[in-house]
Image (cartoon, rainbow, N blue to C red; front, top):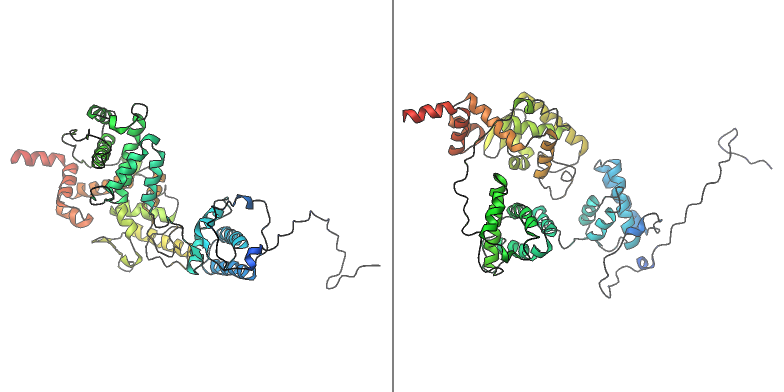
Length: 435
C-alpha cells in the first residue's frame, strides 16, 4: 500500500526518529486547590533542581499569565533575549506555585539567579502591578545601606559588632539618639576605616586595645588624602564606640592633623584629554562626557536632569539653578542619545533625561545611578571631577573675572577666586605686592 500525501506532490523522505523528549510532569496537586492556608512557614525554597528538568504543565490561569507577560514585553519593545529570560522565570514560578496566589519576590530572584538565561527584575514589576507579588522584607533598603551591610561583612569578624554599633549610633539609633547622617556618608566612612582595621586584625583582639599612637601610625602610613579620610573615619568610629560604652576612652579625641592643605585646582595634560569623546562607546556615554567636559556639569546634577529641563529649540538646559547654553557638539550628541533612547525603550515614561536598562522601564521612575556615570569615565581613563575642574580652569584662564565663573558654572565666591588664582598665579603675586 502506498501512502498518500495531500496538498504536496513529490517524494518526501522519512526523517530519522530522534530521542524522545521526556513528558512534562503533571500539574502539582496543590495547584488544584488554591487559597489554602499554610500550617507553618516553609523554609526558603531551593530552585537549583529546575536545571535540566522539564517543568510541570501549567494551569489555565498560569498559562494566561505567561501569555500576558509576553504581550506586555512585545508592546514595550523588550529585546528578544530580555523577553525570553524573564518569560523563563515567570513560567518556572507559576508552574510550581500557581498564578492565583501572590508569589514571593525572594522566589522570583532565586530563580533569576540560576544562570544567564534567567532574569527576574521585570517579572517582579509585572507581578507587583497585578497584585501577585509578596515584596521581600529588605526591599526598601537603599543601595548605600545595602553596601554598608556588605562592607561590614568583609571586615574582620572580631570588629563587626563594633562596626554595627557605630552604624547604629551615626544613624540615630544609638544610646544618645543623635542626628542621623545619610547612608551615603556612612558608606564612605566605613570604606575609609576598613583598610586600617585589616592592618589591626593581627595586633588587636578588640578595638578597646587601640591607643593614640596606633591611630597616629595608621595616618602616617597613608600620606595625603588616604590618611585624611582614614582619620575622619576613625574619629567618628571611636567617638561612637565611646558613646555606646564599648570602649573606656576615645583614643582619637586628642589626635589632630593640623592645618589641612588647601584645595588647588590642577589641569589635565592635553595628551590625556585628547579624544575623550571617542573613548566613550555609546551615545549615553558621549553625552555624559560632553556635559562634564564642555559644561562642567557635576555628577549629582547629571543624575537629576529631566526631559523637562531641556529646551532643544533654544539650545538650553536647566542644570540646578543655572541655564546652560548648549553648543553644536553637545546638541548633536544629545539628539543621538534621544534617538538611541527611543529605539531601545520607546514606551519608557521615566522623566529623567539619562536612563539605563535598569531605570528606563522601572515603574518607580528612579534616576540613573551615579556609578553609571563613573563607569563611563572609567572607560576614558579619567575622573568626572577632574574633567570638570579642568573645564573651569580653562575658562578661568581666558577670563580673569571670578564673577564670570560664578555666573557660568554656579560657583561660590571662594571657589571662583581659587580657580582664578590657580589659572593666574603671577597676578596674585603682583596684587599681594601692591597691597
